[in-house]
Length: 287
Image (cartoon, rainbow, N blue to C red; front, side, top):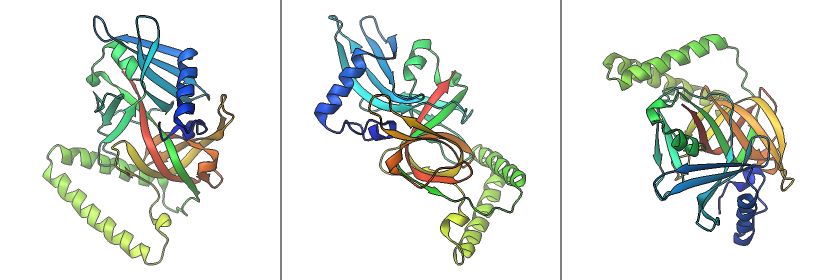
């Protein structure tokens, strides 16, 4: 059973029997069906059940000769609208065959982001290559989260944005082999390390660090993030009545739509405040 069902309001299906009944409900009455021919006698079918305006459950498998649907795997999902990155992406099938994962080389955080690909059926259907991907919209299912107050920021935000863009350019140059860019980044990192250590002697950690986006746990597509909430919308699962929040979070300058159950979120979400939590990163690509 999937560990992030609660993040889309399906936490009540917490036993094997209940989970099996949930899969049966979705396969009998899906909202959207995508069928992709993968060979002369083989195909992939993805059945989507929308249980809120932007989240639900996807069941993947194939229809057999007697029209019976054989389930291979299922996953909860949340869709995002805003473009998160236009950096180059690559896509490959996950080990074990339970879906596809993408890798986005976004230099804003200095490392590639690995995410679960929500719309892999569309990519297979169009026959496009990963090189044709023009953008990706990130979303995430949160297992837990806290609301933090914003930092007291007296700096000019426009200057901060310019510095962040300059750092991104330097990382890109360094990745291309520019020795001077490598030296500048190393010098900046040493200065930053010294500044953080100095401020931590008198200040709380979360007044020094405004946002972060970093790997967490054993799975490659799980991340810990903290960032500013730009919008928040309550949701209610139409099947179970469970309630939660869609949070539009900007972490390390990357927008992510986060879905979380109401009782897994500590604090009152409001635009301008910050969200801190652990997410399963998902992505929807455009090509």
